[in-house]
Image 1: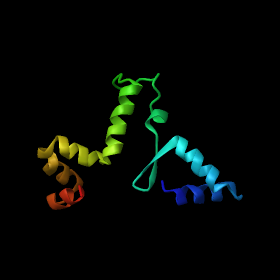
Image 2 (image 1 turned 60 degrees about the vertical axis):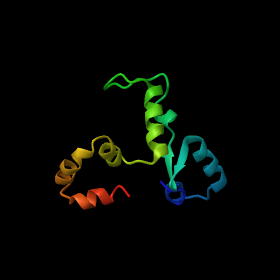
Image 3 (image 1 turned 90 degrees about the horizontal axis):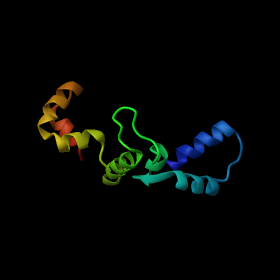
Image 4 (image 1 turned 90 degrees about the vertical axis):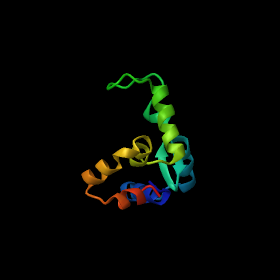
Length: 107
């Protein structure tokens, strides 16, 4: 979510004047800026003391994996295609896209 979107949301919900600098400082403690959008920090989503209910992966490992993906600025589709390049045809057929459109989405 972009900062302007956050401000607009808060202004419409609170219907009052807000301290933009204070909000920015608060956001900076809770999120990181990725290509102009605020993304919730991994340590907030995956506390160290928790583990995944699905596969038992620790919060620490979940944080590291998510931070790796966020820092590389890779979408899940791009990550999947990087790991399994032979699957591009399957992804394209499921999404009803041409191979060229799928490959173009990587750029």
